[in-house]
Image (cartoon, rainbow, N blue to C red; front, side, top):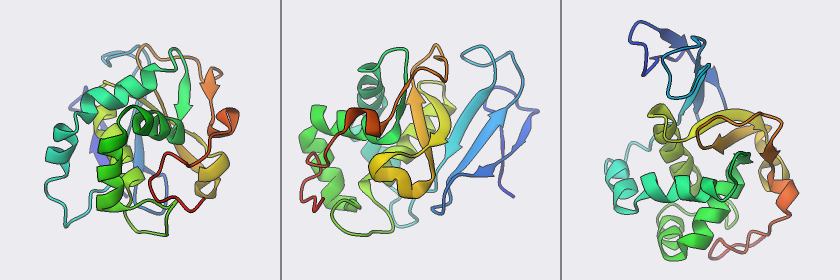
Length: 182
């Protein structure tokens, strides 16, 4: 079983819940105080590829700590499904997103073990551990429905889970992915 310590409670050892077949886990600290937002704190851990030690450096170079929250900010007070964050980031940063697709590919082009989506989701997971973005697991819709469950993202303060926008709600095409075959 995968376990992590709550980043805000050094004495709280949290068992992880497997999120998907890629080895991503979710963790929830049930304490109601001491987190950046009141209530429980949930974060995600997605494994990074062993052959990409510069992953954090690339995320910093692309300013993903600023650009990904900016993509989520387009939907204030709402939880947004992962694909919406990716599409919003790609639309605002087409050149940088094309770099990620060139480097990691994308499942909208061809099956791949590690994709631009995995890289972005891993970065969002790191940002959730610091409280910059909020994570919630939820139903995967539309293009990502094959996952069953997928990550949903919001900015603090935590919105109600009833206030959410799914990929299906936007009826978005995959045309933002360079080389998409969908």
